[in-house]
Image 1: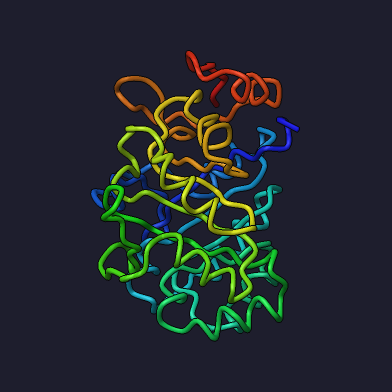
Image 2 (image 1 turned 180 degrees about the vertical axis):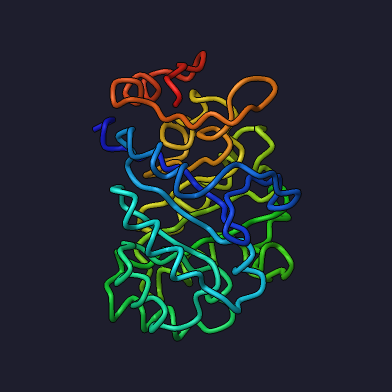
Length: 264
């Protein structure tokens, strides 16, 4: 059914602050995480993904104290990725109130930990984040915030992740992240065709009508976006927003003009 499709805000965390990036670089301050999460509480949001881009690159510090505060203040299902390297850390994350652990570099550095986490906590609790650069025929998976290139194709990397037991794939076009150029639909289709688990498309949304395309044309189970739910207008002013359930249905039935919603 159309209404079952998920639209997921992606919030980027860096040094305790929420930021928005373009191709995961040039961070722009968005606001205090607690304030932004409290605003999202006012909407009927399916879930929120929080990615700590600083922790993902350094792999030295997972901000558990802050994450506990986020979970206490937010009544929305939460997923977190960034710097997770052990099953013990994932257990602490779940104890803090998060429902999903998002792994990226760990798939390359220590796949045995990913497999153990899926076995210990269940596949539904482990999400593989696959960051991709390049155009068709030249696409490659990247890790550590884009600093390391993996030789595997996105489809092969997704299959490997599923073989390890992950229950969901978050596929991001790094080249389109924060650019508003639209989703890389062939990339999403490639990953959807390769695996039998839900695929979340991320990277490139400019307007709300864009959210329908990965679902309708590429078979994605969900769509994630950052700038679209944080900025509005030509000047990209910060305005937290999210479509109502009625608007979600309209978006999924139409790929024409964007449907404007309220912001707080």
